[in-house]
Every structure is written in structure tokens, then in C-alpha cells.
Length: 517
Image 1 (cartoon, rainbow, N blue to C red):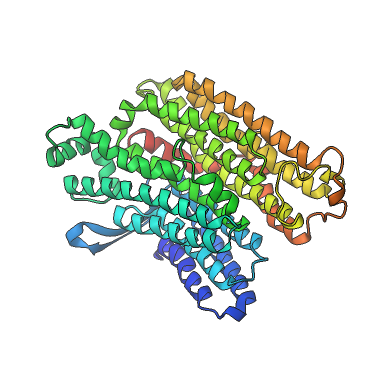
Image 2 (image 1 turned 135 degrees about the vertical axis):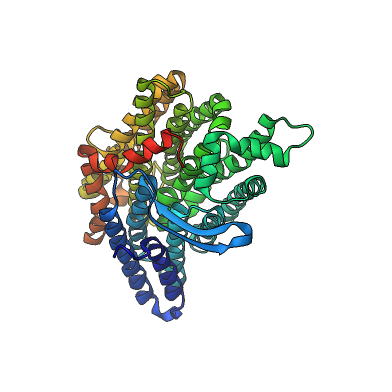
């Protein structure tokens, strides 16, 4: 087992499974969805094996594989896992079968739909484990293509415009990423993330860019900011960071429920992952130069998205803006870490708390947000497509289990103590307040607005007088309860005992603070 290329097997399993499922005939859609589900469970089992073999104290990349690919371009097939990658790989393995089960009702071209879901999962695995830009960028783009078709072919009536907007925004960001890394390759002759991180830590990357690409009218500092800006654009669009967010509400609202679960639970994490894996180690000096405007953008993302969620009447759009809000806390934690030189032991403690909170928030938000969208999908299926805030009322009387279980997910998103959302947000603010007090203070308004719109969601949908339209509305079925039970149990377990996740990321956080890749 120790000699097996586990990461390669992990990535190839859904990739090959996706092509196999898509190759089934149109009349074999029941087999297609069962085969896709079986493949996702095999992947989950493999992820659990990798997690059991992962050494949380090592503080280095594990399960590494490296093979020469295109020597003339310094392109290697290089993969590895640290605590950050492990959490996101596990999250991907958990959310994908949930999304497949939430899409069980889809019969039209089901073999293509489920095949694309597996291809998307393979793209995510590749993105979270690749350590060479060329290899990483292939998987980054691979995740974009199936997501576009899943939205475009199976979404709501306005799906065409939403899918196009999603594709254009993310493609523009990808172009910025590509140009930035081509510039870095010309300056350093390497695409390797760990080698580039070493150059970034030593300050040699910025100087190499100036020596190789220096333009007459640009100083060293300005050139570095330009190159950084290209990479920043790609990740800011993917999170998304306000003002690069306008594609997200329509995309989440028009996508089918299972796809929205994948978008919010997994694909939005790609942007924050890029900040942590690429921007922070490669451009630490540039990000410190820009710390104040970056913190302003993080605060704007937190507060403005919460205010926009409060103004929504469409439940999916409300949760879409809520997703932006919660990922804004990750950006607050990352940028706050840059606001301190980290020389004092107290400062290092705060930085460690903030980054640990960021990594946990990635996992917790993905779990909670995907579950919330699953509940909205259940409601939409029962109500003939209706999902307006004012369309319901009093559903607790006819669907008490629905109300109770969704309430757990809502309170997790709200950050109630005892649930998983609390510990990650608490750590972020514990670290951010001493490092960037003004940004953390303004961000508290986002917490207040979040509580208001989430509690209003519960009140309008489940409490008050029962709307006579829904007197016969069915409670959750056994299958639906089985779908949401695992994530809800995890929310409770992580809320009261987060130590296993914290232990898994602690060594990775320390390496990041020391300037490692």
C-alpha cells in the first residue's frame, strides 16, 4: 500500500468513472446514476484510507509523486498532500455523493449529467493536489468545463445567461493566472510551486521578475504588483471577492440543486486555496505592500454580501450571498496575518489562530452550505419550483423533521456555539482582532446581518400561520434524511470536538507562517 500512487489513483478514479458513465446508452440512465454513486463512494473510501495514513505532525507534503513530463518546459507531474489539501480532498469526497443523491430525480441525459459530475470531482482533486503549475492549470480548467455544461443543460429557465456569465468571468480570471505564471516562468524557468515559494520567501522572485521582464517605465515594485494582479484576479473571481462577485448569485440560483452544492461547497474553495497555496507563499512581500486595500476588500465582501443577502426574496440567492459572506471571513484571516511582522511570540499565536480558522472555515462552510442548498432543493421539489421567502409559512406544522434538521444547518451557518461554524469563525476573529482590529471590528457587522437574514429565513418559511397551499406538503423522506444525516452529524461532532481537524492542519499552518509553500 505504501508504494501505491494513492493521489494519482484518487484523481483517475472519478476521471475514468466519468467517461465510463457518459459512455452508457441513453436508455441506461438508472445504471448511470448508480454507477456514479458507487464511484463516488469508492473515492470516499480511498480518501479515508489516505486520511488514516496521513501524518499530521510531519509538516511536509506527503504521498508525493514526481515524474518528468516535458523537460524542455520544466513541466513535471508532481503531486502531494499537506493539511490544507487533505481537508479539501476530504470535503470533495464528502460533498460529491451528496450532490449525486440530490440529483437522483434527474432522468434526462442522466448518464451525461452524472459523468460530468465525476469529471468535475476529478478536476477538483487535481487542483487540490498538483504542485506544478502546468499540471495544476489543466485541472483548474477541467473543473470549469463540466460546471458550465451542468449549469447550461440542466439549470432553470435563465440558465443560459447564468452559465455564460460564469464561464466568461472565470475564463478571464484564468487568462490572468496564465499570463502571470508565464511571466514567472520566463523569470525563473520553473513552474514548481514549492520552488517558486522558496524564491518568494527569499525575495528572489520579485527581483528575478525585474531582471528578466523589467520595463522602462515600471519600477521593481510596480512590476511585481502587475504580475501579482494577474494571479490575484484569477483567484478573486473564483472566491468570489467583491467586486468580482456578480456572476455568482445568478449562477447559484439557476443551477440545479446538486450542481449548486458543488459550486458553493467545493468550487468556491478553489479561490481561497489559490490565495493560500500560491499567492501567500509566492508574493508575501507584495501582499504586505497591499495589506490595507486587501483588508478593505475583505471587509466589503463580508458586510456588503450580508446586506445583499438580507435584501433577497429568493432563497437560493439569499444563500448565494451568504456563501460570499462566509468566504469573506477566510480572506479576512489571510489578510490579517499579513498585517503583522510576526516577530513576537504573541503575534505568531494570533497568526496561527487566524490561519487555523481559515482552514477550518473552508471545510465547515463547504459542508454547511452544500447541506443548506440540499434543503432548499427539497423544498423547491415539493413546491413546484417555488423558493421565494414569502411563498411559505408555518411549514413546521406539517414538516417538523424538515424544520428541525434544516434548523441545525442554519444555526451552523449562523455560527452557533456547539456547531462547526462557530469554532472556525471564532479562531479567525481571535487572530484577526489583535492583528487588524479595525477590519475585524467592521466585519462584526457581517455577523450581525447574517444572524438577521438566517433567522428571518427560518421564521418566514417554518413559523407563523400555515399557508393553506402547503397543508399537504410532505415531510422529509427516508432517503432525504439519509442524505443530510452525515453532514449534520459532522456539524455536531466538529462543533464539540474540533481537535482532529485542528491537529491535521496545525503543522501546515506553522509551515505557512515560516514562509513555506
